[in-house]
Image (cartoon, rainbow, N blue to C red; front, side, top):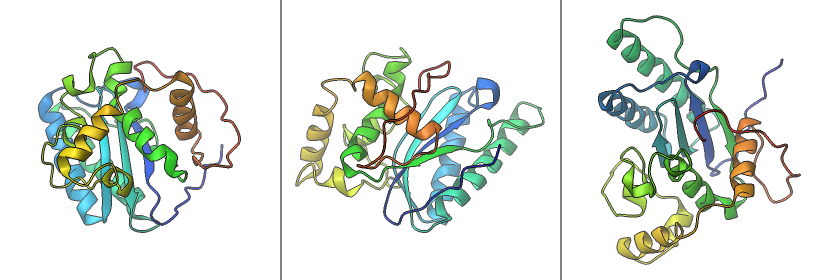
Length: 217
């Protein structure tokens, strides 16, 4: 089956999903997650990618990121994947692939869905029944975006910045967005668009329903 050509639009963030091969875990310990985030930080800076939100689950990762050029995000993800696999294989005396093929992504062209995508990402542990509130899960940007924890290598999207005139006001307004969970139809749309590598834009036709894999995404 031919690969979908990745489309880049300047200034438009991408929602990314990278899964472990055969739904197998890609993180076995907290130290694995620390290593992954260190490499992500380095590669995002190296390829001029602005990272807005992420969550690290046991067998997949979500990100919202804006690249500075047509190849920024793909190069960041390629290098991140390769470097982390080297760590994982060395740590656990294994060989071979870790990831389920190429990462999946979609362009969030419609600005109305940028903050929705933030919430979709950070609510993933709640949908997976790992916690009742996103703030109870450690490996997520919710603590920075809603609670004000300083993470110098995160770049708030301009629409996040518009939530308030101060850091505390933005955090409060952002946390209030989580008073209600995302509607199932919205979750299905975001999941479908990303899995099919289709842009989220105002004139897009309704997505084809794609059931969630094991371990909520």
